[in-house]
Amino acid sequence: MAHPRVYFSLPVRPFLSRRARCSRLFLQDLQRPCIAQNRFQSTNAAAEIPPPPSKSPVAEVTPDLSHLDPSPEDYSRFIFQDKCRVKVHAGSGGHGCVAYLREKYVEEGPPNGGDGGSGGGIYIQTVEGLTSLHKLARRGIIRASRGRNGQGKSKGGKRGEDVLLQVPVGTVVREVSRYDPVEEEWARIKAAEEASYLSKEEKEVWGNPDDPEVEREEGFEETEEAEFNPVRHDRWVLHPAAKPSDFLMVQFPKSYPRRQNIAAMEPKSPIWLDLSKPMDKPMLLAAGGIGGLGNPHFATRTMGRPKFASRGEGGMMLELDFELKLLADVGLVGKPNAGKSTLLRSLTNSRTRIGNWEFTTLSPSIGTVITDDMKGRPLVESKARRTHFTIADIPGLVEGAHLDRGLGLGFLRHIDRAGILAFVVDLSRGDPVQELQKLWHELGEYERMRDADPDSTEEDDLIEWNPFDESADRQQILGREPAPASNTNRDGSLPPLAMTPLHLKPWFVVATKADLEDTQDQFRALQKYLSGVQDGSIEHPSGHERAWKERVCVVPVSAKRGEGVSRIPKLVMELLE
Ligand SMILES: Nc1nc2c(ncn2[C@@H]2O[C@H](COP(=O)(O)OP(=O)(O)OP(=O)(O)O)[C@@H](O)[C@H]2O)c(=O)[nH]1
Ligand SMILES: [Mg+2]
Image (spheres, rainbow, N blue to C red):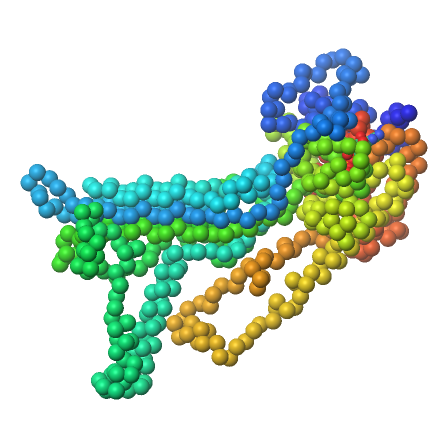
């Protein structure tokens, strides 16, 4: 027989009952079950607005609790991805135009070709409400559009469309590789200048260039190479009526690669962004290539009607690695079948799978608890001023999970990414204190293994010095900066992200299945243990002396009946402060 109420002997502080009249969220006080309509708003919230609370006693309301004890087939899959690698291409610039003014009595008018439009840029913005990177991962390669070519009558080309990447708050973006055509072109020009500078120096040092012997041995070929100036078809456009051979006839001026002014706002290379806050405006990742110049830009006193215009610059390509550092504000940590998914269902609109067997949940699902009434009025008072928080239901943790048992290390990684840990212990199955200690033990072992990762040994810190490295000398000669340090390891992989140690995270315990018989004593034992941990008379279950234990508490709930769960939002909001 089920227990009539969740531990009536516990101090019940009706923190929400004052607002119960206007609350869509917590209509009933703690002694009453959560009812389906009063859970949290979904996207079609308007359709779900419950009828205004009648003046009749709440006891008349018959809550629909079927969603808390659904059949194993009644669930919807939560598509989740916490990591992805994407290639982004900024748009190339449009080409300049070769055109001339033509009027009735002006046959050979001045040049009036328009400039090409700049290519579209790639922007990024964090958006609240997003919880997964799967939409981004699905796109694989993302391209901003190209700028349009300039036209006659001095008409400039249209700009390319920008692309906005929307990512969840708590995403870390790291650059794996980049291809920047402008940078490449500069490198080519500098290499050519360096070659001519060195050959000039060599000639000065090794003798008279008029010496026929020197010329015969090496000079002839080198002079040929230095003077040969190939036509850069990829940098110029001719009039549409021109023949390819005209490329050889035209005297092109020196052309240097250019960038758009907004490129100054790009993050420094290599990109490493920790987007831990919601952003009110997008941030530029890669500016599009600048458009080419129309033929009026090349008019000189000797060449009034230039027959060429410049091509637009190519857009930058970035290979980026996205990783969710903050998966959710709260992570549910517990053994399989402890009731984590049922708890998530009772707190949010989640339709995660529930079944009376172990490992029902195979990948995390995230639910959002909305803590305002959608009019800016908070339903849960807190200093954090948050309107919502997220909860992650993570697959169950078995003994030896750190040795890749059960569902392995993959989901321990997810626990690492929760801001607050909520340990879910089943009061009906053995000693909850031992269960809690085992869960902490697993987390501790995992952390020890992770921190002893061979990737992070001092080997990486060693600086290799090669006294015969000529390239370093050359860079010094040209006054160039050495190549920037890369994000990647030597094998091309990215290093793991640094996380907050688990024992420093705030945590609390949710004791589930409190509606079952003979669970009260287990609960009292757990409560006693935790008050001992808090006042320091009992060692922290993580074994760390400086572990977080400021407000360790246990919340008894019957998630299946929706009882006691409404204390959790208030508790979480306090911990989020
Ligand atoms: N009586 C009672 N049963 C519960 C309660 N919470 C969950 N259960 C039952 O416990 C079983 C397991 O619940 P789940 O929510 O799937 O457990 P889980 O922790 O998500 O399990 P895994 O996904 O396998 O890790 C289901 O049959 C639930 O109906 C509760 O508060 N009271
Ligand atoms: Mg589950």
